[in-house]
Every structure is written in structure tokens, then in C-alpha cells.
Image (cartoon, rainbow, N blue to C red; front, top):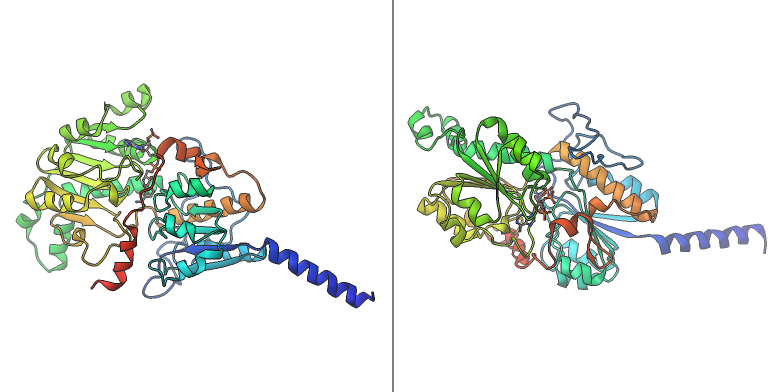
Length: 422
Ligand code: NDP
């Protein structure tokens, strides 16, 4: 064989090998801003953090290909992954078109090995979709909360599910405190009077109270729930919580917390409830007519956990009847919610799109965390156990602590209505 033929033969072998190891990574991100991907930003940098409150280190990828503080969570941002993945010979498909059988997501899914999705704009991985994806081995949540994946089906198919634990927990805790204050003090309607050209003080304050002295409770005291309790302590409120596992006595003492063994006992005494448990079969529709009926008249609910923890129509009914004085949050079901979703128009609400965990600060952390998970995956190194939700056919790591087996994706196909219902 002459040298040219030998070289050509070797090149073909190289290409074949590359083709065999090449993975398809399907990444679903939210749309770019209507004015396009930003060219400039409001601030030049974001604070550099080293560790989370429990000592866990921030993500430790070998390298990142983005500047912290950039918009990474929308389609053009690509979570800063393209250069890295293509340098390894992998194929990266990024799309926001995620709902319905004609979506890019469903078309690309059958030969994808890895799916990356953000809870803000979730690519619902239902059992039916998992069945259409025989090569799927890893589902990464770029954020926290993997309820958009049918965890039962993932366990049965031995698909690894991982999320970037801690990445936006404190972002959400800040947001929850902001929403509690906004509801109790009637901030949003007051702001609207100014925009409308008014100076209607009485209209602004007829529903405005001080938070001081109120009983405020969290459903769950995990990373976010505890951070909310800590942030509320200086407001001189009476703090309560319920969780499956009780906090250490020293923490209860330091924050002056009252523990409730169940949510019924919690809601009876609280003026404000902030929800911070994951969505899983145990917590789905926890806040229904019956539970809301046990709350004090004129209570407030802030839900930055998952929309489906509350019964959609029960919330709207309670706001109309006055049983609830206000409801705020950033989480809906499904996402995006149809244009006729009652939470868009119910009275006394402070709803936003799902944004609390995707500040530019949080994006830098979860993009780095996704990169760390991918580096581990391709180098066959273990993924940190705190990032694992499902592994080896069972709940694992953080998943084994905070979730229960089963599926909470039922009804997610309704997200396709966002495009069709006017
Ligand atoms: P953690 O895992 O730290 O905390 C979750 C807590 O919920 C755990 O303490 C767990 O209890 C508790 N819990 C689970 N089931 C129940 C139940 N049935 N009743 C009472 N408590 C329960 O997670 P994070 O605090 O970081 O996040 C919580 C949730 O917040 C996420 O799962 C996600 O849904 C949501 N989230 C929302 C974001 C947003 O942008 N809006 C961003 C990030 C998260 P234990 O472990 O003691 O059994």
C-alpha cells in the first residue's frame, strides 16, 4: 500500500471512530428577547461566589466559554456549550420549539443521547416521549426541579437525570421574599396607578398591610425554604415551617421557628405561606379547595416551587371569594400556560413568567453546572451525587432525599395550546 492510500485509509478509520462516539445533544431553551440577543448589559459584572451556605462548592467545570453575566438561557446563548461540544465531535441542536408532535424537539428526539432542558421553558419528557427516544441516556435540568421528566419512566429505562443543585436556590429565595412583600404591601397595584398617571393613595392602601408581626410559614425547609426563613427573620415576623425532615434544633432556635408535622397544621395559623417543596406525586395539587378552606380568611400564598402544587381553579376561586387576599409566583402548569389560563386574569395576583431562578447571575451558575455534568459524562467520571435525581434505575443523590417515585408530567401536552389558543 503506498503512503497516500495508507493515509487515506487511516483518515477513514478516524472518521468512522468519530462517528461512532459522536453524541447528539438536544437542548431546549427559551426564546431570545424580542429585540434579539443583547449586545450590552445593565451591569458589567456579577459577584464572584465560591461556596453555597452548606459549604458545597459552586460548579467546577474545567473551563467555560462564556462571560458570567451574559444571557445564556435563551436560544442564542446556547448555555455557552457549542464550542465545547463541537470540539469533542458531538452534535448540538438548540431549539425553543418544544411542544406538540410537529415540534423540532419531537423530531430531533429519536436519536438524541442527551436532552438538556430548563424548568422555565420545560421540554416535557413524558413516558411517551421517552419511548420515542431509544438512545436517550442522560436528561440534564439546567436549573433545579426535574418534575418535567417522568421520573418513573426514566427509572424504568435507566436514564440518568441530573440537575444543578443549589445553582438558583438563593435567587428564588430572594424572589419569594420580594413577592411576599409585594402582595402584603399591595405594591403592584400601587405601581400601576403611577403608570396610569394617578396619585390614588387610598386606592393603593385599601389593601396594604405591614408584614411585621404576621405568621409566615414555608412548606419545606430545604435549600430555598430555609433561605427564605433566614431572609425573613429580620422582618420581626413569627416563622413556621413543615417538612418531611425536621431542621436541627439549633437552627429552629436561632430563627425562632415553629415546626408543624403537616401542612394542615401549618396553614391554620399562618397569614402568609411560601411554597418550596418539589413537585412530585406527594405534593401534586396539595393546595386544593379543602386545604385552602382551612387557611385564615385573607391569607396570602406565594408559590415559586411548581404551579401544579396548587390546584389551578381552586386558587382562582379563593381569590374571587376573598378566602385568599393574594397569590403570587412565577411557576405555572403547564409552561408556557395557555393564553386563557385563569391565573393571568384572576384578581389580586402578582404572577410573572417563570423567571426567579434564571437571573443572569443564576444562569452563569447553571450553565457552568451543565458543563461540569457533561464533562463528567463524556470522561466517564461520576457526576456529583448532589446533582443526581435518578441514576441506575432508582432515585439517587438529591432525588432520593427530596422526591418520591412516580410521575408528575400528566397534562403537560396542554403547553402546545400556548401557540394555538388566542
Ligand atoms: P431541596 O431539595 O433543597 O428542598 C426541597 C425540600 O422539600 C426538602 O427539604 C424536602 O424534604 C421537602 N419536601 C419534599 N416533599 C415534601 C412534602 N411532601 N412536604 C413537605 N416538604 C417536602 O430543593 P430546593 O429548595 O433547592 O428547591 C425546591 C424546589 O423549588 C425545586 O424542586 C423546584 O421545584 C423549585 N425551584 C423553583 C425555581 C424557580 O425558578 N422558580 C428554581 C429552583 C427550584 P426532605 O428532603 O427533608 O425529605
